[in-house]
Image (cartoon, rainbow, N blue to C red; front, side, top):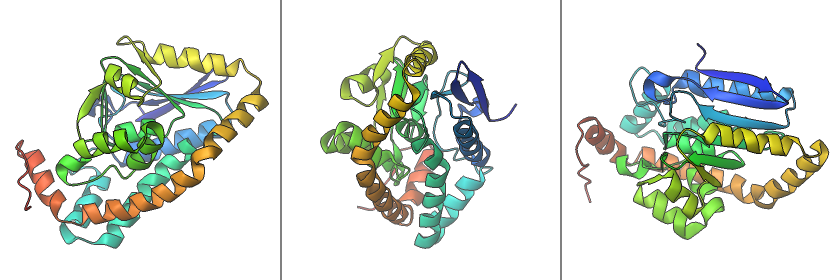
Length: 266
């Protein structure tokens, strides 16, 4: 089974993250598959796109196991403190998500289970997020000495404002889907197991509108913040590279693997 699949029904595209044995954690094949399937869907000009994860989880984030080439490259940048390599990797990963941000129709993330770290950053690239009340949502990167540099800081700030973004990004904690809804991270919270159905209902409602009217309205909604987002993404590349090469991820990742609290140098 492909790690990422694409289906069409009634003019709606559905992209499925399907690497269930690791809670849809993102390895190189998943990143490439996501980009390719979103690009393929865009060529078909659907009325909406729904993105979800098979197996009860949206995505547990970046796969940190050594058999993931992305993790290996990140580790090389971390241990050699090579800022150019770190920045190049962050830009490459952002490139995998660009087709989702620029998709020609409204995009909806249907979140069940884990949407953690890079997993939630993928959801943040969608126009709308629908989450199960029991979903686990968070950006914990600072707890291992990194930052959410794949849109997490920029897109979350746009969504909930600088105060809440600072609380969530710098605190590094998790929220349930119900809590995320109250804080504005997701636009709808539904009972467990119903996120995909709710996202499909919303997609059907979008598809019932005039295609040109929806496209024009969406263009205005996105345009209002797009320039700020582009500037923020560049700042994320710089900040992400600095964090990766600061030395802190060495202790953070070691502590993570040893299942202990990190011992920071200051």
